[in-house]
Length: 332
Ligand code: PMP
Image (cartoon, rainbow, N blue to C red; front, side):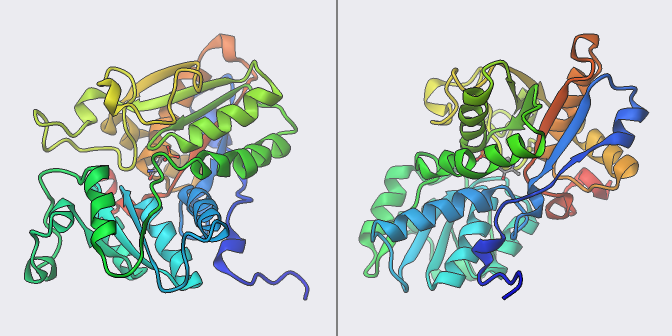
Protein backbone atom coordinates (compact mmCIF):
# COMPACT_ATOMS: atom_id res chain seq x y z
CA UNK A 1 0.00 0.00 0.00
CA UNK A 2 1.44 3.35 -1.03
CA UNK A 3 4.61 3.99 0.90
CA UNK A 4 4.08 2.43 4.33
CA UNK A 5 6.97 1.06 6.43
CA UNK A 6 6.41 -2.18 8.32
CA UNK A 7 9.21 -2.17 10.86
CA UNK A 8 11.79 0.14 12.41
CA UNK A 9 14.55 -1.55 10.39
CA UNK A 10 12.89 -0.26 7.21
CA UNK A 11 13.71 3.26 8.40
CA UNK A 12 17.47 2.67 8.40
CA UNK A 13 19.62 4.67 5.98
CA UNK A 14 18.75 6.90 3.01
CA UNK A 15 19.91 9.87 5.08
CA UNK A 16 20.21 13.21 3.28
CA UNK A 17 23.37 15.12 2.48
CA UNK A 18 23.13 18.85 3.16
CA UNK A 19 25.64 21.47 2.07
CA UNK A 20 26.50 23.80 4.96
CA UNK A 21 26.24 26.92 2.83
CA UNK A 22 26.00 29.48 5.62
CA UNK A 23 28.92 27.94 7.48
CA UNK A 24 30.96 28.03 4.25
CA UNK A 25 30.09 31.70 3.67
CA UNK A 26 30.81 32.78 7.25
CA UNK A 27 34.30 31.26 7.13
CA UNK A 28 35.03 32.14 3.48
CA UNK A 29 35.69 28.49 2.72
CA UNK A 30 37.13 27.49 -0.64
CA UNK A 31 35.61 23.99 -0.70
CA UNK A 32 32.03 22.71 -0.38
CA UNK A 33 31.12 21.01 2.88
CA UNK A 34 28.54 18.27 2.42
CA UNK A 35 27.16 16.95 5.70
CA UNK A 36 25.83 13.39 5.65
CA UNK A 37 23.17 13.58 8.36
CA UNK A 38 23.45 10.13 9.90
CA UNK A 39 21.56 11.27 12.98
CA UNK A 40 18.39 11.02 10.90
CA UNK A 41 18.52 7.23 11.23
CA UNK A 42 15.62 5.83 13.33
CA UNK A 43 17.37 5.77 16.73
CA UNK A 44 19.37 8.88 15.93
CA UNK A 45 22.76 7.53 14.92
CA UNK A 46 24.92 6.01 12.21
CA UNK A 47 25.10 2.81 14.28
CA UNK A 48 21.61 1.76 13.20
CA UNK A 49 23.17 0.57 9.96
CA UNK A 50 25.76 -1.72 11.55
CA UNK A 51 23.41 -2.94 14.28
CA UNK A 52 20.73 -3.96 11.83
CA UNK A 53 23.21 -5.65 9.48
CA UNK A 54 24.71 -7.62 12.40
CA UNK A 55 21.28 -8.72 13.71
CA UNK A 56 20.16 -9.77 10.26
CA UNK A 57 23.29 -11.85 9.84
CA UNK A 58 22.89 -13.50 13.26
CA UNK A 59 19.29 -14.36 12.39
CA UNK A 60 20.24 -15.75 8.98
CA UNK A 61 22.95 -17.91 10.55
CA UNK A 62 20.45 -19.18 13.13
CA UNK A 63 22.57 -17.75 15.99
CA UNK A 64 19.66 -15.95 17.65
CA UNK A 65 15.98 -16.70 18.16
CA UNK A 66 13.19 -14.65 19.77
CA UNK A 67 13.61 -14.67 23.54
CA UNK A 68 17.44 -14.72 23.32
CA UNK A 69 19.58 -11.90 24.65
CA UNK A 70 21.92 -9.85 22.49
CA UNK A 71 25.00 -8.66 24.38
CA UNK A 72 27.32 -5.85 23.29
CA UNK A 73 30.04 -3.56 24.57
CA UNK A 74 29.36 -0.02 23.43
CA UNK A 75 29.73 3.65 24.19
CA UNK A 76 25.97 3.88 23.76
CA UNK A 77 24.91 4.39 20.18
CA UNK A 78 25.32 0.77 19.04
CA UNK A 79 23.55 -0.36 22.18
CA UNK A 80 20.64 2.00 21.55
CA UNK A 81 20.34 0.71 17.98
CA UNK A 82 20.54 -2.94 19.06
CA UNK A 83 17.97 -2.41 21.82
CA UNK A 84 15.49 -0.87 19.38
CA UNK A 85 15.83 -3.61 16.75
CA UNK A 86 15.90 -6.29 19.45
CA UNK A 87 12.60 -4.97 20.83
CA UNK A 88 10.98 -5.15 17.42
CA UNK A 89 12.30 -8.70 16.74
CA UNK A 90 11.63 -10.20 20.18
CA UNK A 91 15.14 -10.25 21.71
CA UNK A 92 16.46 -8.79 24.95
CA UNK A 93 19.57 -6.60 25.16
CA UNK A 94 22.33 -6.38 27.73
CA UNK A 95 24.95 -3.69 27.33
CA UNK A 96 28.44 -3.45 28.79
CA UNK A 97 28.66 0.33 28.75
CA UNK A 98 32.03 1.90 28.03
CA UNK A 99 33.37 4.49 30.44
CA UNK A 100 32.50 8.15 30.07
CA UNK A 101 29.18 7.67 28.23
CA UNK A 102 26.89 10.68 28.56
CA UNK A 103 23.88 10.55 30.89
CA UNK A 104 21.51 10.78 27.91
CA UNK A 105 22.99 7.61 26.42
CA UNK A 106 22.38 5.67 29.64
CA UNK A 107 18.83 7.01 29.88
CA UNK A 108 18.11 6.15 26.26
CA UNK A 109 19.50 2.63 26.62
CA UNK A 110 17.24 2.01 29.59
CA UNK A 111 14.26 3.66 27.86
CA UNK A 112 14.71 1.21 24.97
CA UNK A 113 14.72 -1.65 27.48
CA UNK A 114 18.43 -2.53 27.63
CA UNK A 115 20.03 -3.75 30.85
CA UNK A 116 23.25 -1.89 31.70
CA UNK A 117 26.19 -4.00 32.84
CA UNK A 118 29.87 -3.51 33.63
CA UNK A 119 32.84 -5.75 34.33
CA UNK A 120 31.64 -6.39 37.88
CA UNK A 121 28.57 -8.12 36.46
CA UNK A 122 30.80 -10.26 34.24
CA UNK A 123 32.75 -11.29 37.34
CA UNK A 124 29.53 -11.72 39.35
CA UNK A 125 30.62 -9.25 42.03
CA UNK A 126 27.92 -6.58 41.63
CA UNK A 127 24.84 -7.17 43.74
CA UNK A 128 21.25 -6.48 42.64
CA UNK A 129 21.08 -3.64 45.24
CA UNK A 130 24.18 -2.03 43.78
CA UNK A 131 22.65 -2.15 40.32
CA UNK A 132 19.37 -0.67 41.58
CA UNK A 133 21.20 2.22 43.23
CA UNK A 134 21.91 3.64 39.79
CA UNK A 135 24.90 3.88 37.49
CA UNK A 136 28.30 4.23 39.09
CA UNK A 137 31.14 4.54 36.62
CA UNK A 138 33.31 1.41 36.90
CA UNK A 139 37.08 1.83 37.18
CA UNK A 140 37.63 -0.20 34.03
CA UNK A 141 35.81 -1.76 31.10
CA UNK A 142 35.05 -5.46 30.75
CA UNK A 143 37.49 -7.43 28.60
CA UNK A 144 36.21 -9.38 25.59
CA UNK A 145 37.17 -12.58 27.38
CA UNK A 146 35.07 -11.59 30.39
CA UNK A 147 32.07 -10.81 28.18
CA UNK A 148 32.29 -14.15 26.36
CA UNK A 149 32.63 -15.94 29.71
CA UNK A 150 29.61 -14.01 31.05
CA UNK A 151 27.51 -15.11 28.04
CA UNK A 152 28.59 -18.75 28.42
CA UNK A 153 27.59 -18.73 32.10
CA UNK A 154 23.96 -17.64 31.51
CA UNK A 155 21.15 -20.24 31.54
CA UNK A 156 19.38 -18.64 28.58
CA UNK A 157 21.12 -17.93 25.29
CA UNK A 158 23.27 -14.76 25.44
CA UNK A 159 24.85 -13.81 22.11
CA UNK A 160 27.82 -11.40 22.10
CA UNK A 161 27.40 -9.64 18.75
CA UNK A 162 30.83 -7.89 19.08
CA UNK A 163 30.80 -4.93 16.72
CA UNK A 164 34.56 -4.44 17.20
CA UNK A 165 35.35 -7.48 15.05
CA UNK A 166 32.03 -8.34 13.39
CA UNK A 167 32.57 -7.87 9.63
CA UNK A 168 28.89 -7.08 9.20
CA UNK A 169 29.66 -3.71 10.85
CA UNK A 170 31.88 -2.28 8.05
CA UNK A 171 29.84 -4.20 5.49
CA UNK A 172 26.77 -2.11 6.36
CA UNK A 173 28.62 0.95 5.00
CA UNK A 174 29.79 -0.86 1.87
CA UNK A 175 26.19 -1.88 1.18
CA UNK A 176 24.36 1.32 2.12
CA UNK A 177 26.23 4.48 3.26
CA UNK A 178 28.84 4.30 0.49
CA UNK A 179 26.36 3.91 -2.39
CA UNK A 180 24.15 6.65 -0.92
CA UNK A 181 27.07 9.11 -0.84
CA UNK A 182 28.19 8.11 -4.33
CA UNK A 183 24.70 8.44 -5.82
CA UNK A 184 23.70 11.66 -4.04
CA UNK A 185 26.89 13.43 -5.17
CA UNK A 186 26.89 11.86 -8.66
CA UNK A 187 30.31 10.50 -7.75
CA UNK A 188 31.70 13.98 -7.08
CA UNK A 189 33.48 13.29 -3.81
CA UNK A 190 37.04 14.53 -3.29
CA UNK A 191 37.52 14.12 0.45
CA UNK A 192 35.63 12.10 3.05
CA UNK A 193 36.02 12.92 6.74
CA UNK A 194 34.84 10.96 9.76
CA UNK A 195 35.80 9.94 13.27
CA UNK A 196 36.24 6.33 14.27
CA UNK A 197 35.05 4.17 17.12
CA UNK A 198 35.15 0.59 15.91
CA UNK A 199 36.27 1.98 12.54
CA UNK A 200 33.32 0.31 10.80
CA UNK A 201 32.14 3.52 9.14
CA UNK A 202 35.64 4.54 8.00
CA UNK A 203 36.66 1.09 6.77
CA UNK A 204 33.41 0.44 4.88
CA UNK A 205 33.31 3.87 3.26
CA UNK A 206 36.99 3.79 2.37
CA UNK A 207 36.62 0.43 0.64
CA UNK A 208 33.49 1.38 -1.27
CA UNK A 209 34.56 4.88 -2.33
CA UNK A 210 38.18 4.08 -3.21
CA UNK A 211 37.03 1.20 -5.41
CA UNK A 212 35.01 3.72 -7.38
CA UNK A 213 37.66 6.45 -7.34
CA UNK A 214 41.09 5.71 -5.84
CA UNK A 215 41.85 9.46 -5.70
CA UNK A 216 39.26 10.13 -3.01
CA UNK A 217 41.09 11.17 0.16
CA UNK A 218 39.92 9.57 3.40
CA UNK A 219 40.75 11.83 6.34
CA UNK A 220 40.10 10.63 9.88
CA UNK A 221 39.74 12.79 12.96
CA UNK A 222 40.92 11.42 16.28
CA UNK A 223 40.59 12.75 19.83
CA UNK A 224 43.60 14.86 20.81
CA UNK A 225 45.61 13.57 23.82
CA UNK A 226 43.84 15.90 26.29
CA UNK A 227 40.47 14.43 25.19
CA UNK A 228 41.39 10.81 25.97
CA UNK A 229 40.39 9.02 29.16
CA UNK A 230 43.62 7.61 30.63
CA UNK A 231 44.99 6.80 34.07
CA UNK A 232 46.83 10.15 33.99
CA UNK A 233 43.75 11.98 32.73
CA UNK A 234 40.78 10.30 34.46
CA UNK A 235 38.51 13.36 34.21
CA UNK A 236 39.06 14.07 30.52
CA UNK A 237 36.05 15.54 28.76
CA UNK A 238 35.88 12.96 25.97
CA UNK A 239 34.37 12.90 22.52
CA UNK A 240 31.75 10.20 23.04
CA UNK A 241 31.90 7.07 20.91
CA UNK A 242 35.31 7.50 19.31
CA UNK A 243 38.87 6.34 19.86
CA UNK A 244 42.38 7.35 18.82
CA UNK A 245 44.27 5.04 16.47
CA UNK A 246 47.57 6.90 15.97
CA UNK A 247 50.08 7.25 18.77
CA UNK A 248 48.47 4.48 20.83
CA UNK A 249 49.65 0.98 21.67
CA UNK A 250 49.13 -1.55 18.86
CA UNK A 251 46.60 -3.52 20.91
CA UNK A 252 44.50 -0.34 21.32
CA UNK A 253 44.15 0.32 17.59
CA UNK A 254 40.57 -0.57 16.55
CA UNK A 255 40.58 -3.72 14.44
CA UNK A 256 39.03 -2.09 11.35
CA UNK A 257 41.34 0.96 11.29
CA UNK A 258 44.32 -0.33 9.30
CA UNK A 259 46.68 2.05 7.49
CA UNK A 260 45.03 1.11 4.16
CA UNK A 261 41.79 2.71 5.34
CA UNK A 262 42.93 6.35 5.48
CA UNK A 263 45.23 8.82 3.74
CA UNK A 264 45.72 11.25 6.62
CA UNK A 265 44.41 12.09 10.07
CA UNK A 266 44.15 15.04 12.41
CA UNK A 267 43.90 15.43 16.19
CA UNK A 268 40.89 17.40 17.45
CA UNK A 269 40.20 18.36 21.06
CA UNK A 270 36.76 18.26 22.65
CA UNK A 271 36.87 22.06 23.07
CA UNK A 272 37.62 22.60 19.37
CA UNK A 273 34.70 20.31 18.51
CA UNK A 274 32.38 22.17 20.91
CA UNK A 275 33.20 25.50 19.28
CA UNK A 276 32.35 24.17 15.84
CA UNK A 277 29.12 22.59 17.10
CA UNK A 278 27.99 25.93 18.60
CA UNK A 279 29.00 27.70 15.42
CA UNK A 280 27.10 25.48 12.97
CA UNK A 281 23.88 25.44 14.97
CA UNK A 282 23.98 29.25 14.70
CA UNK A 283 24.79 29.35 10.98
CA UNK A 284 22.77 26.44 9.54
CA UNK A 285 20.45 25.37 12.36
CA UNK A 286 21.81 21.85 12.69
CA UNK A 287 22.43 20.55 16.21
CA UNK A 288 25.29 18.09 15.88
CA UNK A 289 27.00 15.78 18.37
CA UNK A 290 30.63 16.07 19.42
CA UNK A 291 32.11 13.51 16.99
CA UNK A 292 30.26 15.17 14.08
CA UNK A 293 31.66 18.51 15.21
CA UNK A 294 35.22 17.16 15.42
CA UNK A 295 34.93 15.90 11.84
CA UNK A 296 33.51 19.28 10.81
CA UNK A 297 36.46 21.00 12.50
CA UNK A 298 38.80 19.04 10.21
CA UNK A 299 36.60 19.83 7.19
CA UNK A 300 36.81 23.53 7.99
CA UNK A 301 40.61 23.39 8.22
CA UNK A 302 40.87 21.63 4.85
CA UNK A 303 38.23 23.82 3.19
CA UNK A 304 40.27 26.94 3.99
CA UNK A 305 43.15 25.75 1.83
CA UNK A 306 43.53 27.13 -1.67
CA UNK A 307 44.56 23.66 -2.91
CA UNK A 308 41.06 22.41 -2.03
CA UNK A 309 39.20 25.17 -3.88
CA UNK A 310 35.84 23.91 -5.25
CA UNK A 311 36.42 20.40 -3.92
CA UNK A 312 33.58 18.44 -2.34
CA UNK A 313 34.23 17.41 1.24
CA UNK A 314 31.75 14.90 2.65
CA UNK A 315 31.55 14.90 6.46
CA UNK A 316 29.85 12.10 8.40
CA UNK A 317 27.57 13.36 11.19
CA UNK A 318 27.09 10.22 13.37
CA UNK A 319 24.64 11.64 15.92
CA UNK A 320 23.09 14.90 17.08
CA UNK A 321 23.45 17.32 19.96
CA UNK A 322 20.40 16.11 21.86
CA UNK A 323 22.49 13.29 23.34
CA UNK A 324 24.89 15.85 24.82
CA UNK A 325 22.62 18.41 26.46
CA UNK A 326 23.94 17.45 29.91
CA UNK A 327 27.59 17.88 28.85
CA UNK A 328 29.25 21.27 28.68
CA UNK A 329 28.68 21.31 24.89
CA UNK A 330 25.52 23.36 25.36
CA UNK A 331 25.16 23.82 29.10
CA UNK A 332 28.01 26.26 29.74
N1 PMP B 1 30.53 8.96 16.53
C1 PMP B 1 29.72 8.51 17.51
C2 PMP B 1 28.95 9.49 18.31
C3 PMP B 1 29.63 7.14 17.78
O1 PMP B 1 28.83 6.69 18.76
C4 PMP B 1 30.38 6.23 17.00
C5 PMP B 1 30.31 4.76 17.28
N2 PMP B 1 30.71 4.39 18.55
C6 PMP B 1 31.23 6.75 16.00
C7 PMP B 1 31.26 8.12 15.79
C8 PMP B 1 32.15 5.88 15.19
O2 PMP B 1 31.52 4.89 14.45
P1 PMP B 1 32.28 3.56 14.05
O3 PMP B 1 32.08 2.58 15.17
O4 PMP B 1 31.63 3.12 12.80
O5 PMP B 1 33.74 3.88 13.88
